[in-house]
Amino acid sequence: MDLIINFKSIGNIALELKQDRKLIDILDFSFKADLDTVLIDTVDKFLKKNRINLLSLNRITIAGDIDKHSSAYTVVKTWISAVKGINEGHKW
Image 1: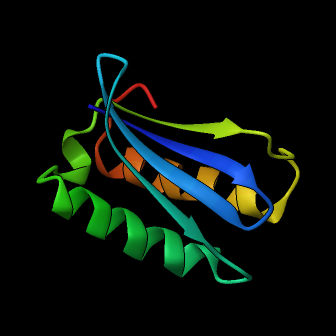
Image 2: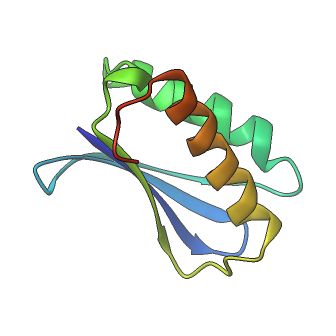
């Protein structure tokens, strides 16, 4: 199972859960300056709804039109790195 964090527009993200390229579920959410807490809470609820453990994901990726120097990108990239550090061996 893969989680894609898709930046749709400024302040809007879609979480996409895919299995072998097949879309399993999608959740759109918005944020302002609080992306760090909103991201963690939203991903947790999204995965719980789909009965998926965060550490059982095969891959977490960032998609969409996002400036790689933006704070939003940095927050998401840092969160992915933290999850990867918890569960070494993934290819995120």
